[in-house]
Length: 339
Image (cartoon, rainbow, N blue to C red):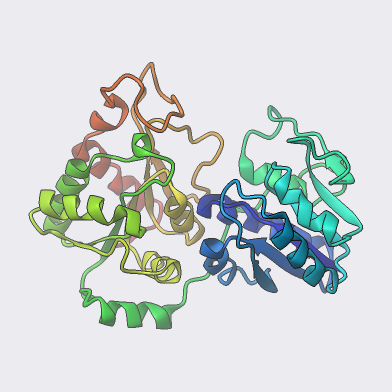
């Protein structure tokens, strides 16, 4: 059995597809599973043993590039896939499986995909409120009951971790607290830099080595946190690849993170995680680990799901104080963390 999965374009969503890959292997002995994904998410696939090969899709957000899609489809046609499972709901994402003449093309209804997909499923959003379960449902035959969805899991590479620690001159004789201050969706999902800075000072006083991890877009936020912390943390935002970020998070004694792709990475690595929520909701895409704790305050206007605070006060994050967040750490220790 050979299956091609068309993956989502976000880091967190890609992590949440991994349980579906596991279910496919449980259903099909000797499965060859390939995943078509954007270049920036391919490192995640290399940490999923269920994936035989990650295939790069060089299409920017919203780009049709029909000629390039057709050329890639011709290359994939030679693989003779038995089935394609399309996770995004866009019309464009369903084009390549059709052009590659894959006989069974599975996905949910969305954006006029009749004809492109011939195993078209109707999504019951009430019955499946979580994204991870929606993806998992596509691994099953139509109408089959969904078993308990396994939690996402990634593999960290210890040898690479040692290389990064040496390269970045990171302290090894203290437990590491990793802070992930970015959120690709927008500012409304980001805890204020001054709060992260205050938390970094507290963590350093309590014996942690504090590392900030994120993309190059988060470098300026990281600098602001270092300044707010009076130098109590090391800014690695933009200085590590996604593979490196996975391996550093993999040895963290504590992760404090916004609702972001790295939050899902931390949960998939089963690290003790404090997940900070404000404008978004943990119902649809929660961190799926018993060692992850959601930290939020209830505001009448939250969640608003906006990229920026529509009321201008940003109370859902500003009133979530560093002291409130730090008090959640003992609960994580009770769950099994001995840092």
